[in-house]
Amino acid sequence: MNARKTVSGEHHKPRLYILDTNVLMHDPASLFRFQEHDILLPMIVLEELDQHKKGLSEQARNVRQVSRRLDELLTDTADLDQGLPLPYAQGRLFFQTAAYQQALPEDLAGGKADNEILAVTLALQNRHPEKDVILVSKDINLRIKGRTLGIRVEDYENDRALEDADLLYTGSEVLSEHFWEQHSRDLDAWQESGRSFYKISGPAIQHWHANEFIALNQGEENTEDFAAIVREVHPEHAIIERITDYRHERHAVWGIVARNPEQNFALNLLMDPDIDFVTLLGHAGTGKTLLTLAAALDQVFEHKRYSEVIITRATVPVGEEIGFLPGTEEEKMQPWMGALEDNLEILARSSDEAGSWGRSATQDLLNKRIRVKSMSFMRGRTFLEKFVIIDEAQNLTSKEMKTLITRAGPGTKIVCLGNIAQIDTPYLTETTSGLTYVVDRFKDWAHSGHITLRRGERSRLADFANEAL
Image (cartoon, rainbow, N blue to C red):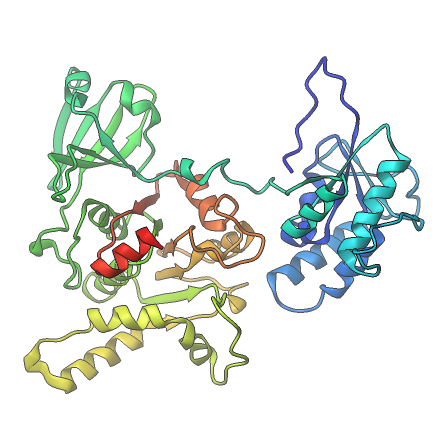
């Protein structure tokens, strides 16, 4: 659903939207997203909300928020037959106040919540032919059943960041070979604190974003003639800065060097103290976790910019649940942190002369400055001078992402990692994932940066599997 106002001069039927329970659980503000159109909540939806109100999950919090808002709207003087006026919208909210007798096909068993919602929608279609009755649901199967019954159904799309995931901002751009010919007329160059800056005017700057990377003649040999980061974008000009090349050993970060241009761009974002928020997208094996951990350890131990590393992730299983886990918070999170342990083994490697004692001492030192935290206990916290890593961020909703990012206090850097092609959370897609949402919303902020990693560096087997499977 993406409710739009009627264009002047067009004569469309007024719309009546029937909301499924999962829409309200997904976005508690959905009641106010339908502009001038009316909304009706079936009684079974209120019953399902009551069943899901208990617990500490984000869905339970959303349900309680919806219940509070409904309670605020239901005043003593409210006339349910006329509908309740909705704040922030021009439509009205109706409740099912009577039983509707509507026959369903014999295959659709009575008493099931989805089928009761379908029956209410069919009954309203028959009772109100002067209106377009539309059922809005995040449940694909319910939408399929609705279409087979002749019901007009829609997905709830108000939280969609983009129309298509292919339109998502990548964080880098390869410039044409004629770039300098078109932009060198008013070029100004200078150095400041050992850093090279350029002031450029021309047509290309109109669609640049803050902290976007630009490169000339980027080839397959992982080299380019020129690579820079956009520092400022003004209507008439842009200021860019030549980036540090982390593909050379002299610029190694905790022993790690970039293997391709995108990894080089990522390390420039991760190592920049002026960038507070970084998002890294890429499929398995592109180096998201390894690069981020290397940058985190280097800035905690070598540069002393942050006091410790905080790591959390969405605990969404790929297969079946394994039941409750014993132990402390960090011990419960340990099974979810296999990627962390794998990458720490690489970063904690000592020289052969150090032996097992040296490797053990290094591991103990790292463990003292790395904290694994559960997202379930993030509300109310404030992180001061921490390097926070949010792994598997594609499984978070936009509201959950907001909850985590707003935990940042002074001196804290937050890095979100994920692959929007591997979403395991129900009702989330590539275009509605919280990770997609923040990439799109932060792309013009001067203290954030994003890069999409495209080249796998894990192994030829992993690269082939990503392409062929």
